[in-house]
Amino acid sequence: MSQYDTLSLFIDGKMTNGDSGASSDVINPSTDVVLGRVPHAKKPELDRALASADKGFQAWRKVNSFERAKVLRKAADLMRARVDDIARVLTLEQGKPFVESKIEILAGADITDWFADEGRRAYGRIIPARADGVRNMVIMEPVGVVAGFSPWNFPVTQAVRKIAAALAAGCSIIVKCPEETPGSPLGIIRCFHDAGLPDGALNLVYGVPAEISEYLIPSPIVRKVSFTGSVPVGKHLASLAAQHMKRTTMELGGHAPVLVFNDVDVDAVAKMMVATKTRNAGQVCVSPTRFFLQDKIYDKFVAEFTSGMKATKVGDGMDADTRMGPLANPRRINAMQTLIQDAQEKGGKVQTGGKRIGNQGNFFEPTVLTDVPDTARIMNEEPFGPVAVMCRFKETDEVLEKANRLPYGLASYAFTKDGKTATKVADALDSGMVTINHFGLALPEVPFGGVKDSGYGHEGGLEGLTVYMTAKFVSQMG
Image 1 (cartoon, helix red, strand yellow):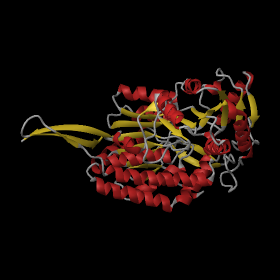
Image 2 (cartoon, one colour):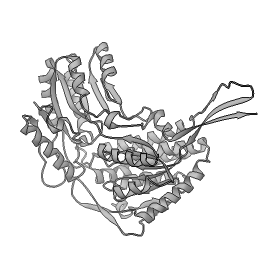
Image 3 (cartoon, helix red, strand yellow):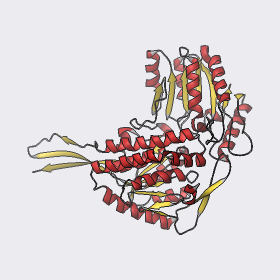
Image 4 (spheres, one colour):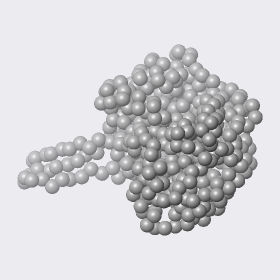
């Protein structure tokens, strides 16, 4: 609990609570116990953060990429050394099982390591000139001060993706992390600070989201915006950034289809997808939701998947036997109940789950729905919870049309042993990411991002570094 005795903002290399006295409770979603209070940044603190980031950028951009890499790698080592302490805080404030929290912290360390090395390879290029004595060069430079906005579902890795990439590129960053889960990002910020990052290169604020975004984004100091969150908020922030000609990365919501063909090992696929669906209680932007099952395996898959969901142990994330923790807040409980009730009213059937568990904490049963029509809200709105919908299909062209029906385009899954089918599906699915016969997303070295209403730009991979850089063309004679 000591972490919650010291919750603070982090500005210009120092912990601070600010001057306004504004704050909000941090609540354990498993027990409803108030863990502590997180201070909110108001305009005076945001002005200090902006000035700090501006100063930090001027210092950090002059540090060569090899020295920047050393600082980032040391930060990654500190994350690994402190993994148990930070993971405990993450589980207390967010609810996910402790083992998932440890995986998230270690993933943050791997992301930081990867960008440390990739920052050393941010090469420009020489373009052959048309005249003697002329040298045409493309020089890669950091874009400037970044405003990053990260969500509560993965409060460490989502923040680290922005922080590590921005710092590796030579940018400074003000990261606004979620008020619901402030302790674990603060633990990560301390790792970067203790690794030797210059004051001002990394600043952390909490507060009223709209107040912070509407103050930081228009500031002339901020040159780049990175947001992870819902589609409506993302569209609003993208519009605001466009008014001020700010570069943006938008990693928004999804409604991932899963295509399962007749030739698969049903037991193995169902087991894999149960684990994927219940990960972080389904509060994952790439969580599989619309399951399209070919005729011959439909009944068996539904039975196996339902059995697996029903057997999932739901409980406090600090319990070693827990396989799925609570939802993050009461709003998510209400959202699940509303979507399930709507599906039932339109003819859908609940095979398992569908209800809140108990009256303490935000626990919800892993849920499987069948016979749900396309008109139901859950077939059109991202549930962001532990609910899966089973649908039947006959032909490949038919299922591809159904999979691509929605305006979302973040992640898609497919399972088949036929190479031609796999290739056709990979080419036809209108998603930023397609993974076939396994879960192959969100590794540090691969790009993560969507199309259509799921956003644009990438985090992770080479693409996740270049969005924090500008290409300057220099043509020099003599």
